[in-house]
Amino acid sequence: MANIKSAKKRVLVAQTRTERNKAIRSKVKTYVKKVAAAVEAGDKAAAEAALKTAASEIDKAQTKGVYHANTASRKVARLSKAVAAMQ
Image: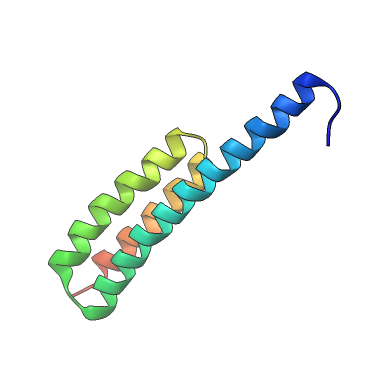
């Protein structure tokens, strides 16, 4: 553990941010799974609705710095492609 007050604070801040980022990543994964489940079930309406919320959550995560811009864009593109491929 750090001895200097500012270093101790940095450790605490890093822990707080790590927990926040984990929570956001987990939330995004949940929404991505909902899209995948709807695609697997063949329910296009549900897949499109889930895609809309998932894309929104991914964009929020990117805005907060949890995901790099290209990573977020890639995730949304792959989900969109999967939904568009449905019949």
